[in-house]
Image (cartoon, rainbow, N blue to C red):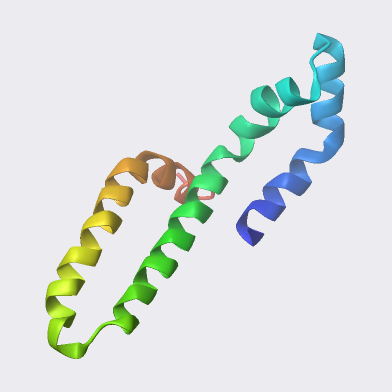
Length: 99
C-alpha cells in the first residue's frame, strides 16, 4: 500500500471536502466520485502485485515431480489478470515518464 500513500497524501482531505461541500455530496458520494477515480490505478497496481506474490507462494507447497505442470497451471490466472488489468498498469507505470 506504500505505492498509494504518496498519491493519497497529495490528494489531501481538503480537496475532497471542499469539492463535496460545493456540490452538497455525502461522504460515500465524495469517495466514489472524487477519491476513488484518483486512486483507482494505484489500487489496481497494488492488488495485481499482491496477487502475483500470493499466487507464487503456491509453487513452494508442491512436490517437485509435478512442479512443471503446476507452473503452467499457476501461470494461467496470472496471465488472465495481466490481460484484464493491462490498461490500468500501463497508465500507472507511464505516469512519470518523460515524453
